[in-house]
Image (cartoon, rainbow, N blue to C red; front, side):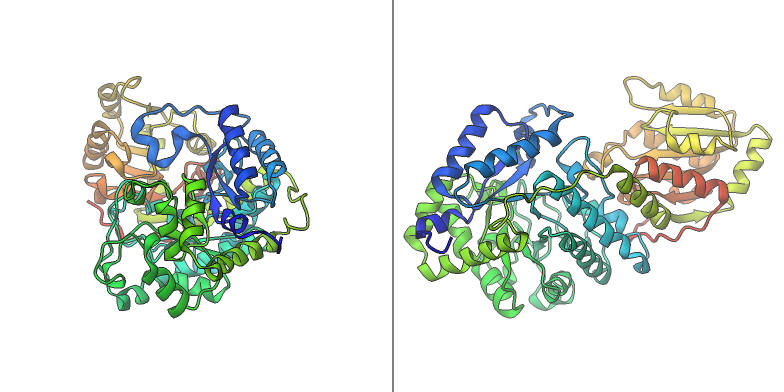
Length: 535
């Protein structure tokens, strides 16, 4: 490897996107890129239609049950085409399931953020299990976790992906997650430096601006990154966000900012590990340059070692060769080679090992469910429900799932009652449901929040909000919320609930645990990881 020419070394900086559901033509084009340009690695996504910046094109996402086998086969194929072994990366914040069907899914970071500090070992276990799943597929590098402190409830892109708004917990849990992955030989990545939490623009589409001073950032946003650096984090991803106070007052994306990467991260914070750009196809930076290769050069010149989702590989290589010093090229090349050495791919081409362990994932999810469930309002919910059942005054209402759900099945072992369900506006008659519920005094409501992102009120229909609001004002309602806790403030009259329990995920393990907790009136040890103002 040491004898590679300068052009071959520059090729190592490029990690173009590849897609599990690509056509044979696309696959052959990627093989040609790998062979001709000696690129350093690949970043896997599900399909071109699901890439974050493509959602506005309304392309239909096709789901395939064999995606896991496809990615394994593609990785073998791409490695065979590579003059230098490829570092294979993926976004797997909550497991391979973030990108690949029929693979284990683990809780979102916001759910883990609800765990008590003394249960941080569970975050370590999540990192470890995700690492083992990646290893089974032949992936070396997880572009996770987020070290962003979610201190803006209107953030359209971070939210549930952050451990919360407590900087200490975000730092501690990020480090635990990284240690879990490192334990099984997987590289980790803290993102999005210098902190994407306090923004209200989606950087896939526009450029968020942080107005904090360096002192304010050191006090809050930068804290988890500093802790990560102290614990030898493998890599740090630079976010597409502007911080004028760090950049001579300019609204330049951090990804393209030498003062933010070279001066703040490298010199002031003393970080000498891998620096990777956020995806260079994101509109906040991709629309800045008309000449192909210019963006890639600017990102490299700012201090990035890896150019993620680079779309102009040949032109980018030429631009870097033309403008960069041999010393700077050598620095980035050595960092990438050290990372490859760490995961063993330079000396061992049989990296893939192990099988997906769904049972272990399920047991871990159940334990997280037991320790994260959060009681927000409690007025003797269990006794209230049993008393209502005895008087035939108890009903159950499921929102956005039918009555055949694990939560209701668990309750029905000892708390049977009439059940109603609203699934969607096309198939459910909300007025007739409301009329039926008039007959009952006490209602257990299971709200399965449709989306994790806040756009359009998490896709909770206005008619559903009106129904819940009316029930809260006229009945004794015990509400279990399976989803993003940021959905709570949009529910009118929520303070009038007789009981309010935040469950975070709709996994079967979380539903089952919620049912057991209700029947046993068990203590809830979880704590909301973000501040919520109830209506």
